[in-house]
Amino acid sequence: MRLVSPALVLLMGALSLPAAEPGPSGALAAAANDQLFPQRSPWACVQQTIGTTVITIEYHRPAVRGRAIWGALVPYHQVWRAGANEATTIRFSDTVRIHDQEVKAGTYSIFMIPRPDVWTVILNRRAKQWGAFEYDPKQDLIRFEVKPRPNAFTNWLSFALDPTSDSTAYVQFLWEKLKVNFLVGVNVEAITAARMKKLFAQRPNDWKVYCQAAEYALTQAVPLHQALEWVDRSLSLQENATNLAIKARLLYEAGQLPEAIELMERALRRARAARQSAATIGPMERDLSSWRQGQ
Image 1 (cartoon, rainbow, N blue to C red):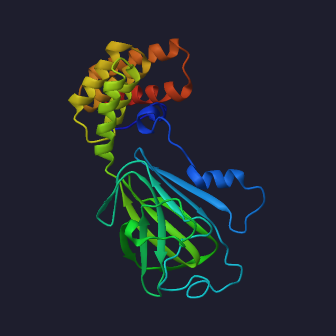
Image 2 (tube, rainbow, N blue to C red; image 1 turned 90 degrees about the vertical axis):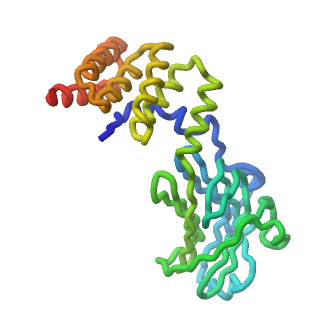
Image 3 (cartoon, rainbow, N blue to C red; image 1 turned 135 degrees about the vertical axis):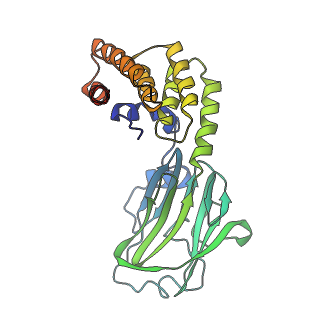
């Protein structure tokens, strides 16, 4: 099993996360920031990262307030904004797949057509619009049907993003006593490979890029020889406790136990001399102790 220390997981940040990924943006964020008085249906935002792909939903949250909702406040068989005020939007930082259809990176409005037994979910290319008053079906990107499910009472309309694996997440809509879900899939391996290629070209002399690529390979189906090439490149640029420890772990995975022990000992000496934190030194010590017992 390939084990990754908490300290090295933290180091992966520059590779695993976009360099600058915005949160709430555009007209909705401006409206939220400029709102001077309380709104009856307040603005909200939910965000989730899948791999390095960020999914962001911005919406307004009406409350039930004792009213009949389905087939009454929200009519059946009519296009609905899936919230209140501005149309609800969903943003993908990379291309994703929904119901076996490709959805390019970008921001889309979400509309729904509620019915007693089945709902239609719509992603529309026109993101900035008020409600569904100017909804144009010609701008629809995709439409698909989902079945509403009974759910615990939810007073304030809510969206949630619930990861189901390293590469998928459910978009969840909850209000009153219903829940509507649909799955979003991300090609994490392809996106990460493209990101690595770009970073290698942009930062060819940055030891951290190659170090983090090798660290990422510890937990993924990346050939060990490729990961060792990356960590050797990192070491050639700047040898330190971090990339020494990563190479030690890669050698351990390759079955080269004596070499792994020798390198981890060097990494520990470097880390202690640099007075690095227990969060960095502790996992190195545990790995080394475990490997020595296995000799």
